Amino acid sequence: MDQNIRTWIKHVGRGKTLARDLDATQAEQAIGALLDGCFTPAQAGAFLQALRIKETTVDELVGAARALRQRSTPVTFEAGARPVVVNLAFDTPRKAGVVSLLACAYLRRSDLCHPVVVWEPGCLFPQTRSVEQTKDVLRLDPWLAQGECPMFTVSQLVSGWSGLSRLRAELGFRTILNTLEKVVRPLLDAPVLVGISHGTFAHRLPQVLLERGSVRAASVQGHHGTLDLGLGSEPTSVVVLDKDGAREASISSDGFEEPAILLKSDFDRWPERIRDRRGPLWKAIARQAALIHSVACDTSFQESLQILSSKGIQHGHA
Image (cartoon, rainbow, N blue to C red; front, top):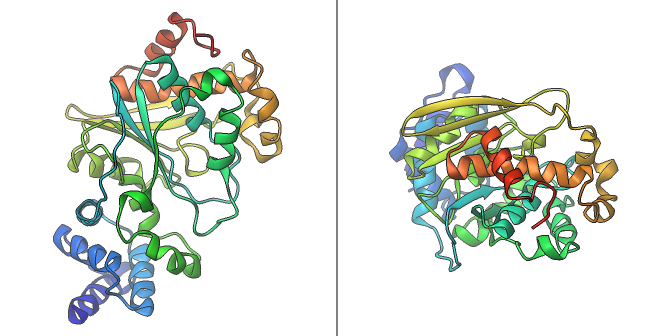
């Protein structure tokens, strides 16, 4: 194993122009060895940094995803009809509340589809508690609270993942592990949505997810690496991939008057805003729910908005 580790590091560690890509099998073996604790801390740091400099390929991500799946831990939950996996793994100090988490509860409560949420507490910024704090807001609304979705951390789903937390925090930069968190899911064939901040992976991550069994996969260049719609002056870019190929969309915030609800400065007002069914937070939830629904049910964003509206729940009214 030591010789293999040195070989993998040598392959990827020759700098931006001379580094060689790993094939899928090599990547699977390398990430598997990393999860199994076979790397020394120095080797692990060198390997992860070299991959970051080189930039990860689709084959490397596919192989790494196989390693994660081989070490998956079975979980029991009621998937419900029209399941969709919403992966909220992100690691940033800037994010306030997570509208997508509220939108998932909105969809489940309305029985339009049944999201399952995957997330992971941050390693680089452990003080960021956006997901936990958003759950507190969700539970303040009795109607929405009844839609709280099954939630699993990556550490719950992948054996050996939590053992890498200290190393990741000590390295202090994002690695392939931040990307791999986004391909973890408890339902292999269900549609999946992930949020990304790096445009290079807008097409790569859906490719990986489709290769690993998802019937449909979407990457959202959302708010700070989440899949929250930005709601600012720039449209949010979405790439959806299925057996019929890739399609791209830009979702604008036209008509949305308060993008500040996504900022930290407004997060303290969410407990108040969740009680105003016609206020901007509920409007943001409805828009986010339409995005998730469109991927889950293979409709356009506008069609999903109309479906939500026709059921009389655009602002949380059952």
